[in-house]
Length: 343
Image 1 (cartoon, one colour):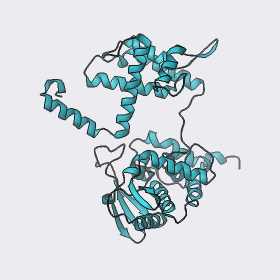
Image 2 (tube, helix red, strand yellow):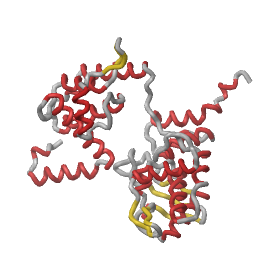
Image 3 (cartoon, rainbow, N blue to C red):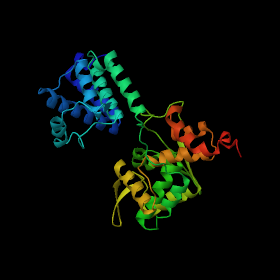
Image 4 (cartoon, rainbow, N blue to C red):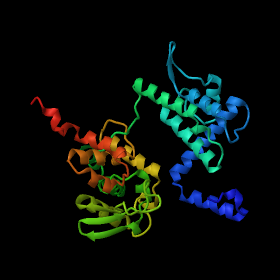
């Protein structure tokens, strides 16, 4: 691999621009946030600006500063309260206190990537750092910590949310968005926001085909292992057609912002999540809903209806069974024949 430092200035700039363009927007924002936090924490902790490579002792200090552990006095962590408050005041933390282990692991991974890209000695891959993170993970599990998941929107929840959508322009849009997000395979909020008319074709009075050219798992475009064509059928097709006709959308983004009766530019991923949350509230549903709820709900419902896992993954574009199996099994749990041995 040719390093940018070995290239002419113009070529190095081209490489950086190419890397930036290829990265998902969410990933870029996430990495930038993590590195800003590393810089702010290092400045507050040591009184000097962060410079790579870091020593492994600093990475270990970062971990114990942010991961809670159980002691005789109860849960404790090493970040001094005054430094914690400085980070909160600077807007680098939302509130004082330790983080969930997943947040710490993510920031260590970002720092590791920064070292790799610069071809520097990587402290994050040292045995001591790996051991501390491994033991922290075990301790968190023993304390009962589990990854938090958004509430799934399966068929029952979806029907309740659809019932809140009237025939106004906003109602038509939200109904179409919910149908599209669920029926096309549990699309992520970023995929819904990015959906374009040139990727959508009408195949019959009751059907569309949406071609998913890019997704989180297919950032380089469809591969031989992917199935990019996602059918949108029956009620979902009718809802989508009604929105497109009423909004007079023939090109560009499928789902748009609305200003009173005027159709605006594409929705942002955050706006998609807000629509899902609003419709859940209007339906009186209890739970922690977000844009991802459509995706987890699609897999959960497929498990309930006994759909083959391979068919589900062909729609969702999950590449790893481990990523989808939890939701799938949750949907199948009550139908497991082994649970009825004492009938």
